[in-house]
Image (cartoon, rainbow, N blue to C red; front, side):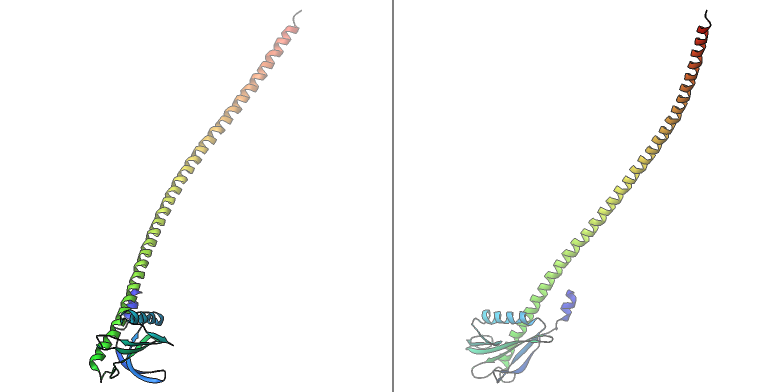
Length: 225
C-alpha cells in the first residue's frame, strides 16, 4: 500500500501561470497542484502564511490576503499577497498573486521574482508530500508490528493446539490403561464368582452328608432297647 501511494504522487510539482478573478477583479498569479486532501493543504497553507512569512493574513470567503509583508527571496520591500486554496477532482490547487508595488508577479515581466516565488510553492508541495509519506511510513510500521504480533499469536495458538493434542494422547493412553485394568478386574470377578459357585456346591454337599450322618445316628439311637 505504501508503494502504491508513493508511485501515485506526481514526480514533480509544476507551477504554472494562471489568472484568477478575485472579487470580480482578474489577477495574474502562480498555481501549483498538490495531490492531497484540500482541508489538510488549506490548514498547512494558512500555517505557512502565519509562521513563515511572519505576518497576519485576512481571510474572506476562502481568499487570504497579506498586506505589507516582506518575503526577502522575492522582494526586499513590502508586498501584497493574495492567495486561494481550491479542491479539485485530482487533489488541491494553491494559487497566489503577488503585488510587488510597481508590478504584479509575472513570468515575463518579473522573471527573477517569478523563480523565487515558484520555489516557495514547489517547496510547500514537497513538504506536504514528505509529511504525508512520513505518516504512511509510520502507519506501515505500525501495521508491520501488528502483523508480526498476529503472526506470533498464530504460532502460539498452533503450539497450544499441539500441546492439547499431546494431552489428548496421554488421556487416551490413560483411558486405555484403565479399560485394560477394568477388563482384568472383571475377569478376576468372574473367576471369583465361578469359585464361589463351586464353594456353594461343596457346602450343599456337606449339608447333605451331615443330614445323612444325622439320620444314621438317630436310627441307631432308636434301635437301642
